[in-house]
Length: 76
Image (cartoon, rainbow, N blue to C red):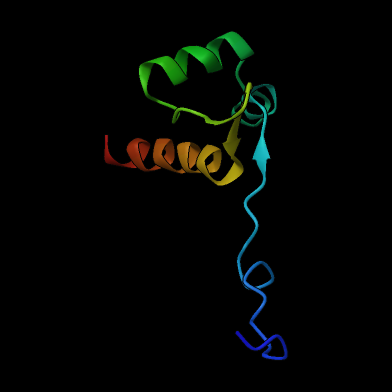
């Protein structure tokens, strides 16, 4: 491999989707942390990504839960 060859910066070309803790996700959803954990258990909220002992959710997935609830509201 030629070290002088410029490689595109893949990180700079991708959108960053921050990972958030469950308590922050609960605040965004407007529910208590125990209710948030129940919603994860019942499948309303996706399961977290595990980073060692940490559980984190992509912020976009939490906003997708809100969008899905809004869509269901309009179909009922």
